[in-house]
Length: 144
Image (cartoon, rainbow, N blue to C red; front, top):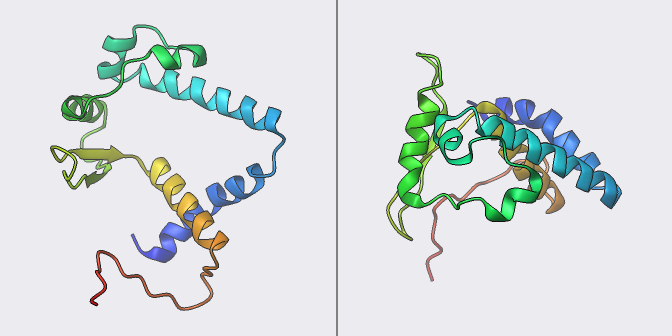
């Protein structure tokens, strides 16, 4: 996907992020609680989590939930892939493995749009503009 297409796809999420940064604390907390409930509900549709959670956890259960171990990521990925219609390909990225075994992580387009929106917000807050030329150094090291 081109950079322009990613910007366009992320625009609604960017606008929502921009507006929500000015919400009153009570409104933000209410929104976060609703989103957490939606996330828990969605997770129980994935066999991996359905086995571990049983029914959908509540926001107050967060501290007591098991932490996903690196060794379980592959099982989770297979569980997620079992739900995806044939021919559909989620976005995947591989961790570097510098702090342990490398794992493949799966993302859907909604998550990617959110990641791109957050990246745009960060860049805009630090002076970047899509209307000016940019140079990106990815994985480059500076020679001294």
